[in-house]
Image (cartoon, rainbow, N blue to C red):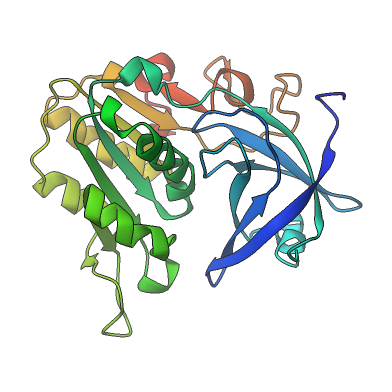
Length: 265
């Protein structure tokens, strides 16, 4: 099997997460790390990079937002249908290197999806990590992802969910109105033997990193998942380069001091 050619896989489950996002469970049984991605293609339409949001050797989950021709076509997928995938690609979060540490996970919007793969991994290796603090921010109650999983995360970890605004009054999930950075600023976080993982809009990551630094975190304790459109996934097209590094090969997860303050761009 040529690893650079897409192969067909069966869709095991289709689940709508929000008005414009959905999760596909695929019978892809390849070894992968939290933070890696795959290239998903729809014949005759195109290809798009999608982050893996699970940790399993029996399947792969992909959370997809409808923002283009490929993702809108994928939104029409059905259980039992076929999907074309190549990968996984890239470098994920250094889970083994951070065993024995506290982990702070900060996600915004669809950037929560790659962090779900991290959370799944932690659940499968819980004894190897200390305190887990989750900060997840969304624009509105309707856009909250993984509502079913959130109930379990709240039982097992220190979870804070925020929404930027709530125009419709009451809603069914316990979340605070405000920016996720406000929750981070108010939290007591010990930088000793800790690491922080971030994924989301660059503005959110920049503000969150500044707050982490104020709390004593060093740049080599902070890991970010860079959102760049990765066309080839092989380091050939150069489209996803960040300060001399390829997101698709050297990332998408980078230690913050390795690439500098690209979130300022």
